[in-house]
Amino acid sequence: MRILNEISLISLYHFINMFVQVNTFKAIKEYFVEGLEGLFEPGEIQTLFEITTEHFLGWSRTEQRTKSDARLSESELLDFHFTLKRLKRKEPIQYILEEAPFYGLLFKVTPDVLIPRPETEELVHLILNQNQDKLKILDIGTGSGCIPIAIKSKRSDWEVYAVDISEKALAIAGENAKKNAAECHFTKLDILEESNLPDTFPAQFDIIVSNPPYIRDSEKKSMDAGVTHFEPHLALFVEDDNPLIFYQAIGQNCLSWLKDGGKLYLEVNQLLARETADLLYKIGYKEVQVIKDINSNDRIVNAKK
Ligand SMILES: C[S@@+](CC[C@H](N)C(=O)[O-])C[C@H]1O[C@@H](n2cnc3c(N)ncnc32)[C@H](O)[C@@H]1O
Image 1 (tube, rainbow, N blue to C red):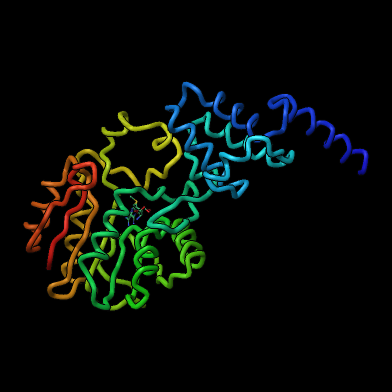
Image 2 (cartoon, helix red, strand yellow; image 1 turned 180 degrees about the vertical axis):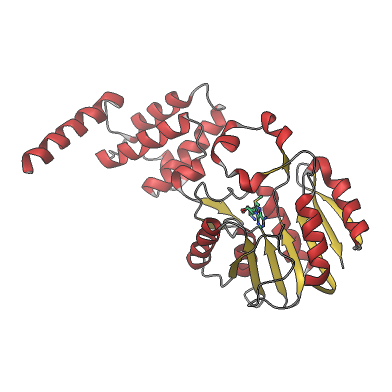
């Protein structure tokens, strides 16, 4: 057993020496940057290296600038080596490190959940800015739980509920709620099949929010391979011949799930924002508005019952 351990230690040593000659932070940075050249923009490579360093070594970006000659252990070298290998396959850094920042919090993410996006932070921000009173809120298609958990972390007096069709996503959302000390109630629900809220939920809500799947199958080909190969298709795509299927179901159900005067906040496909707004008018909502994101794309539709 001891001989075996010695052999594996010796081969580990040779293995590490194969890819980096000196075990300094500077040398591992060069190895990492060279490995990604041509695959990502230089600025992106720098950011990927900083995120990886922060994750494995716990060094802030300022610290990283002063530690060129610091020596790394063999296991630390291996962490960088294996991260680089996966990045070369275009796997998103958030899945490699199993974490993603969202609205100032850290979320666990695995390929069972969508990686939270900055546009969705804007949706959360809008809800928090427009609503002050204590209220009850429901998130439909919660994924990692980023929306309800971010909201609960800022408004501890709000009652926060969320649903998703995916049990695996709900398990991750539950872990994230614990990790961020945000009490949220998660339950499985298929919004396309179910017209009743779970028995354990309030009968009606003040706010309902959703970032449902909204990318048409035909838009796949113009998307980054990191998204189409690694992120869950259940969270992203809808068929071309019925791209508003989720908005139809959400709009219809929320007419009974919202209190009178209650508000609906939806993240939408920028190319279908007008159609989504028209759909909500037709279903019976008032004060339907299309709101642009920070990149001037039509990104949020909100409406009142
Ligand atoms: C675009 S992702 C949004 C995830 C998360 N809310 C976010 O903003 O990062 C859409 C979510 O809807 C869920 N979903 C897909 N089909 C559903 C259905 N029929 N009923 C309920 N949820 C569904 C997916 O599992 C996924 O978590």
